[in-house]
Length: 124
Length: 198
Image (cartoon, rainbow over the protein chains, first blue to last red):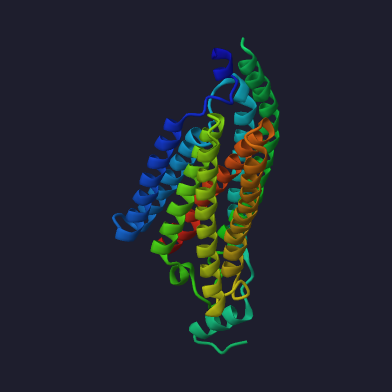
């Protein structure tokens, strides 16, 4: 029986689903209440809900998708880590580049006009 | 080793290969969602005079959607568990619960979309709304295909019973369903909750 239990297919347990489900519901409600009740300032709330989301992400990976350190599943873990790196580069790279570009953009005619008027001169 | 456990062992090995392939697919799907998230992050302030995220999101409604999807993910897990115990009726019941909850989620999402389009805030309105519809719509489309797959699976269980091919499919589809729930965590947090804070 031990061989079967280690083969990666039959280790699925009802308990792990239940724990994962209850914790996920709890974390979802937690971040929802934090946002709706405005317990903390905006910046703090964002930090806390992002951390909560990451915790829930790892909980669901462990309890629902059964990612663990077993040797046979190491390819699964390495694909996951590779994916996380790619996603990180894609999302944060885009945000980094685009926010910089926004700041370095040439002003539009309307913006130049408004600026000139605010300085007391006529428009273009 | 008895004959039954030998068959189970062989099944586990076949299953392993299918899981590898499917997992690689899920990881590449993550890249698709990541690029949509990046688009959203870049465009979410470009409202072009239209409504911002604060004006259009109805948080209690989204919370209900989230909990429905979470419950359906849980019941998909229970269905897989019952399948491995060879409880056919229980598997079918939990898969049908998953389908009903998934369908409820999809209908809620579509009614939210149609409401936005009716009041003139469709994806044509601004960069923000385009990226919002693209991101949440892609997730919804995955849900739709998942629902189709689940329905086909229920028919297969009814007709063929819980043979090893069907068992493998149950495992893969429940992985897909859990994956969609994982993606929704980030949509819920980044699009909805953070959209309302700012």
